Image (tube, rainbow, N blue to C red):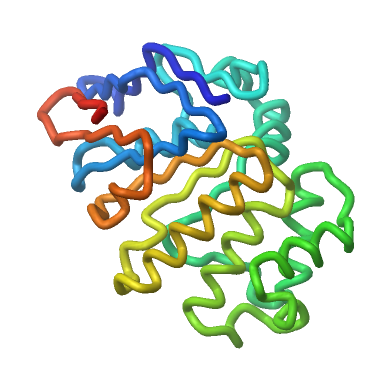
Length: 222
């Protein structure tokens, strides 16, 4: 369960302040944070990922308020508990797919478990690419590797940043289905941040953000 309360973030002295609605997201209720550019959804994602530090509020996952963590403790928590699917693929290009996943585990302080790495790639249908470099793969294959890297540490929270924005309708649906099914199999909470209205019907919990001058407002759809 991911639970946030009274979460705010300010960009510098005199900058805009974003005040985000409280979230309560369980394994069976994936959340879609939907909004246009300037609405604060990327800021919200970076807060949930532990990349930005909130000005106030709490973020509790697996019994830990990680808004209160810092330094090495936060890095370790983020690496072990949070899987992040970025909008654009980013890899260590000199390494193979298998080695990229091994690095993700080692960075989180986990052993480079060959069995977990293989099973993660196999579940996503990309185990045959394990010894290729990411640059040798298609865009769609790279995206699956990105998802594999987010899942390889078996996180409690999966965050996806605009995972379908550059895809056609068929492939967007495939990625949405893939994220939701893998999250369910892992028993992980899933939160997707996007402006892609096509995903609305796939999620039981939708939060809409609108751009405003000094704060973010939101509506939770029933």
